Length: 266
Ligand SMILES: NC(=O)c1ccc[n+]([C@@H]2O[C@H](COP(=O)([O-])OP(=O)(O)OC[C@H]3O[C@@H](n4cnc5c(N)ncnc54)[C@H](OP(=O)(O)O)[C@@H]3O)[C@@H](O)[C@H]2O)c1
Image 1 (cartoon, rainbow, N blue to C red):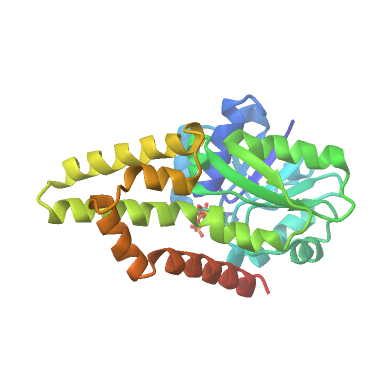
Image 2 (tube, protein in one colour):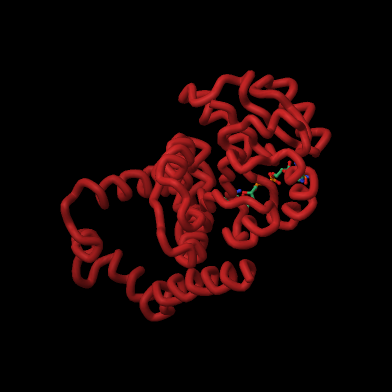
């Protein structure tokens, strides 16, 4: 297998490391097209692939070319990349909000995968949803999925429009989780704990609670009920959350993120 990663920043490097970890590719067959000088020097130092430019002729031989630049850099990248792509290359884009149709027409390619990963991909615990160009051969889709699955779970959506909701839910999701954790730690500090003690109390609580969701065999409502006894402390907190419509506002925020993703992909 030969792979090229275009743009080897945060996400590009996560994929490079994951492919090498699972022996999907050897570093001799992994091309890393990067333009940032500091990043290039780092890539050369860690020696995990061959650093190149976007119009390097060797890219033509890649089974898969991953587009991991920012969406606003895509047009610039496409000028050089178009010169070396062939119809045999499978293109996998992880650029947020860039529709299949746009990528197909700018690159003049037919077989494109559009994927939306999230940041826990770094630990192999990511969630990636993806769609493919119409009539893309199933073997090519599977090949691309095998690569995406090196960073966690994958799910295929026939309807590309759902990727805007995916962006809002699992793409941005880690930030919502960090936001809740941050405010819980702040509450702990207000009640007199130092930062590290509060962080320990909250982080272990989140970890244990996550596992209860999957293992306790109870609905989320039942899990809440099991902690919140009538007239007790948890109920006091939940009544403030309900009064302030925290749940509804969380949902509204996520729908707003979906709307913004739709707007950006126009
Ligand atoms: N980060 C996430 O959690 C996440 C999640 C889902 C999807 N994504 C998507 O993943 C993509 C990459 O995100 P990221 O956070 O990894 O961005 P990033 O860290 O900025 O990485 C992109 C890299 O591409 C380089 N680049 C720009 N133009 C180039 C060109 N013409 N040739 C070669 N390299 C070029 C950039 O260099 P400069 O710094 O010099 O511009 C940068 O090093 C984005 O489209 C984003 O929407 C990210």
